[in-house]
Length: 134
Image (cartoon, rainbow, N blue to C red; front, top):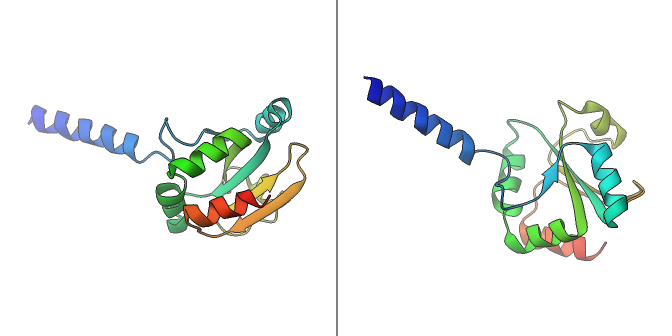
């Protein structure tokens, strides 16, 4: 019985690790908007805000399919400071950028000027095409 419980515990821990939003070797991100602004200014990068929430099917699809694409991840890590914004934990940011649904990706320059926006799920190719234009 102890072995079964131990096995279930190990499986639960592994499942939690696998289900995290982003793997350690993928998209570099933060949840701290103020730090992101500071880092963007010091590193001469743009800011990408990804508005997300638990239980959002299309948010999960975006993370699983789009934000795991290595070419996209490389371009985002090179040119952007990415902020994951949980609309339920950071409602002030959602309100500031008029985000009422998820997922929404808002692109800012390092001075916080809005330079683009994607609403809803997009695949990696469309996301790449979009960032090439801004």
